[in-house]
Length: 288
Length: 320
Image 1 (cartoon, each protein chain N blue to C red):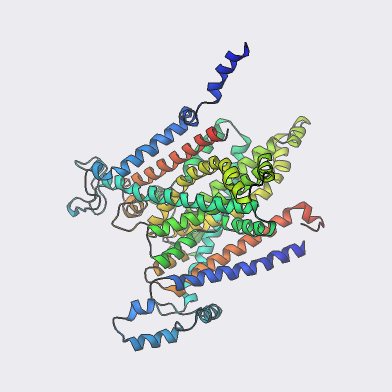
Image 2 (image 1 turned 90 degrees about the horizontal axis):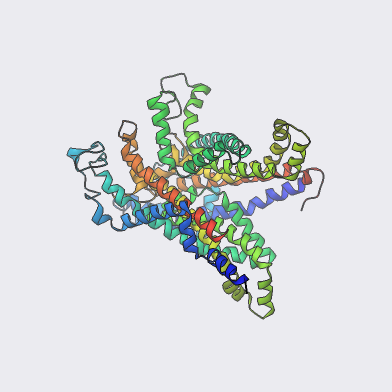
């Protein structure tokens, strides 16, 4: 009986809940705080923005940073940069979260299919996926823009297309490892059907990898969709959007008003890094 | 070996067919009717029908597909809907410029990416490695568009080293040196994302081979760092480098399209972006098809290069 106290002492440390362990990782907390803050700001934008983000003031164009009433100055049309910055993350976050969620769903199905289908189906599927890895996704964006006209749907379609091969690969390689494990064999010998094994036995073991991967995908794609919007393929004027703000501030960046383009660029960088950090933190917790 | 390469070449044919179908689909799926949009104000329904007939738009879909493919093999490549001139006349010169930019950016991505990855990898865990990886992380998350602007601001406006944009100095003699001066900044900006992907890959490959048993054996036998890196680690990371180069070609092409506008580089990206609002499908389709085919060809070349680098195949093996 003398061993009992020792076990009791050890158990709480090992069995600490995933959330508690996540909160002990400094980078995860930093990432989570930044993301939380930006989501909150985006949701409360109408309350927080000091001015109408789309209202131009021709008499007050390119006001300097710190001018009265315009903490971050104004742009070429006299619009308040701070207000546009506060509104500008909404589309980016929405697009990134929705399209990564879609990509995770599609990629998980394809990855599982690749791992559990017959050799020929699996071979064809995974070879296609390999090819799409390096595909210049800008072509997808341009094609979708030609079909649908530029807009948010172009961004979502492009991100989904670009992300699915990566998710599929991750799920495929993990599912192949799981497939060989004894619990799958056991379920099979108990008469479970292949789809049932996939859904109830294998899938739960892949969830953590998929979540980790999805988190870093969101960061990457916030940066990517910003560039697409800057090109004019995504969010359309006059809507405030970080990517568009960069291209709108392009002309005046070289003439000394660097802030108009640089504040949104910094916001994109910060949010993308935050998702990276959270993803790394999640990896340490869920896949130690 | 030869058989393997022939199989790879044959495998590209169905792929090209699928790509051509998808690109053809663009004009079919679009809600915009370019003829109607452009002319419905001025012409009667009967006249519009005649024009549709002239463009072959009233024929069955598969006939239209065949006609489109045929038109791509003529010297004009079809007629642009907005400028009424031959498609290839618009697309080819721009494509050549984009190809130059992509080639230069790929070269930079490989040279700098391998250099960064190597230097970080052999200093694994030390300050230089950690600093480099921090910069790599920041660089990977920078909006390319803004990065291009900053490069112009630094190299052209602040330091005055490089021209701010375009392909040639309109007042100067032109020539190769002038072209290179104009090329370096956009190529660097376009290469950023791919460069950092290669850097991370190479770093991981170097660390892995540093820690392998045979390198430890060489080291214990007294071989110097230089000999080990040059002869052994270098050789082991070559196939992954070719492999990643194939993998980043897509992001380099995407990067090139992103920065063309900023650097006023007269490439295909700008042509396509300006063709989209007017639904100029012949130009859009020819441009997208050309880049997609280029991508397939580059992929094929890297696959074959990997076959040639693979000693198991090189020394007369039948392959798998």
